[in-house]
Length: 431
Image (tube, rainbow, N blue to C red; front, side, top):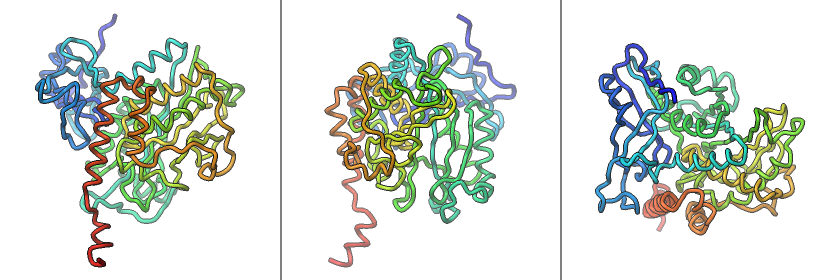
């Protein structure tokens, strides 16, 4: 086997290497270039707690890593060649993988969940390709509010106003190896969407983790705070993560028949429909994320599917044979891409293996389809469905399944324990 090339770009003095944690947040270390060769050979030590912390870096006793066993180490090794950051002279960035001190996979690594489903698809003769669309807000770091006003979705004037920050996001992140197809203002002040070109599923998920980190770094360099928080402002559109799925065999898209979705693709859709409610927690992991799920919000509230229909949970895009795909629209921009893609792929493969048939296609307003199966609109309901789901436990594995549910239950408890400013304003002076 040829040795991988992890050589550093000329002039590099520091390497930033990281991977995705429990929430898909990129975490790692900065390494002097003088120590890089040793890291490539021996790995870089981290506490396994990296996979057992919440988004605020808080820890709690979990079955695998806890105070009882002292939060032991694992190692991180590079899996991509370091690339120079255009906005930080002398610094290169690369993506890493986790390995236990026993040189085996780390049981808490969410990346392993997706790897298992990719291996399953490979055994069935398929390559899974995924395109990703991510929405986020660009905010003033002081006020935490958008600097622009009003909705200018697709507006080229608004796009030009934001080009000083969106231009570098498109161009420089593309130069770093994440192929950006386009960007546009979205359906809220300060909100934008960026599309990443489809690729093999694991590559797509790795790119989402790194993309979110790089966007936040680039935004800060240009005087903005970027956030992928699902619903930062209740009155405005939330941030979604739309995933476009297709299966390939012998270089051909097996979802396509003359540019139309075929029976195999319909089986995949049926599998998604069947599992969307119980797998919801993989698509939206916080109480805030479920605030997105409102009627007529362009965020789905049920398992409907339709052709080029943005009111449904599963949107079908047809066209050229290579373009036929299944877009799943319920993901939040702040979710863990490994868990979301793994649950979706597992659902679709189940649909193929079991020859499932989807419901009647929705041709009108999906929000008004009374026969459609609802998906959870609050985290407590999602936790209940996930905890009772043998399917999800099988996809995630016992340890990660329990860890995800523990974090969700902690988040529900934390949010429920707060008295909000709205409550004070509404009730304090009136009772």
